Image (cartoon, rainbow, N blue to C red; front, side, top):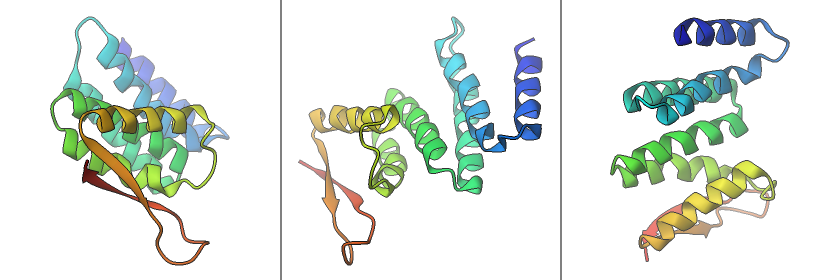
Length: 140
């Protein structure tokens, strides 16, 4: 049943006037898989990876951030903290504004949780003032 509903939503998303939401239509079932009584981390990871691929293909940075955060949280919970950081760093570092939005606030909170674990994200300016800031992870 759930598979049919997911397939219908994805197909509807592809055909809609908002095809850029397709990445989110892949990510949400992953979140549901993690919250369901029969926790299915493998299914969630597959959903998150597909969402990330779609977001990257569409150059949709906000959807890429969401998919990266979901995948990073899953990786953290599985003990793959370094991989989680490496996944999220370039996406979070891409943004130069909008830090008062929910998604970027959540990404910052995730960074802070890693900081409490002994890691920090240092902002490194590259080039001239119009260049995007990037993040470099270091042990603090």
